Length: 67
Image 1 (tube, rainbow, N blue to C red):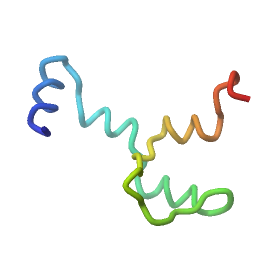
Image 2 (image 1 turned 180 degrees about the vertical axis):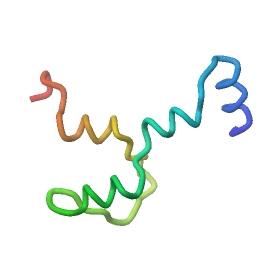
Image 3 (image 1 turned 90 degrees about the vertical axis):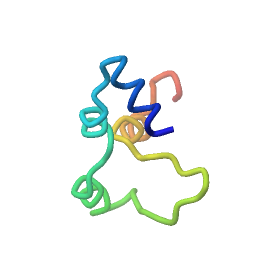
Image 4 (image 1 turned 45 degrees about the vertical axis):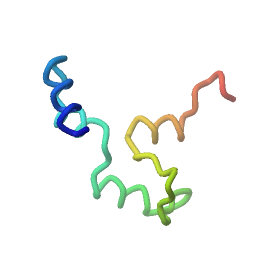
């Protein structure tokens, strides 16, 4: 599956490294978040989704139509 994803990214001009750099949190960003409430880190479950900057931004600043 990984090879196919890399092939498709190449065919469509997607730079997977740049995309990961843009979206995935690095350890220093996570440490900064954990300095105070309301964040904590716990065990992962089978439903765990990657915490990306976009998902974090949407969690902190939900879409105006949502409330």
